[in-house]
Image (cartoon, rainbow, N blue to C red; front, side, top):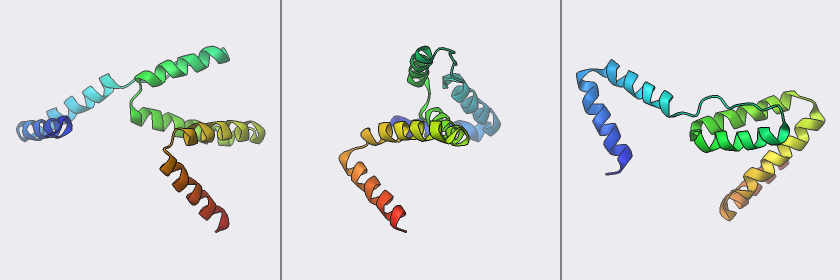
Length: 115
C-alpha cells in the first residue's frame, strides 16, 4: 500500500469520529504546504529568477493554475506581445513532452487544423 492510500485510510478512519475536524485539518495542511502567491519583481531578470524560485516551492495544482491564468491574461493583452509569449510557452511545454506525447500532440493539432 502506498503512502497516499495509507493517508486516505487514516483520514477516513479519523473522519468517523469527527468528519468536520478532519476536513479542517486536511484544509489547514494544504494551506500550510502551498507556496502561496508568487513574489513579483519589477526588474525582468529578477522576475524570472523569483518566478523560478517560487515554482520550486509551489504545488503542481498551483503551478497549473498560475500557468493557465498567465496564458489567459496574455491573450487579453496586445496581440503582438501575446503571440510571442504564447509561442515561447508552447515551445517550452512541447520540449518537455516525451517523444510519444509530442507525436500525439502533433496529431491532435493537425486534426484540429483540418476540421
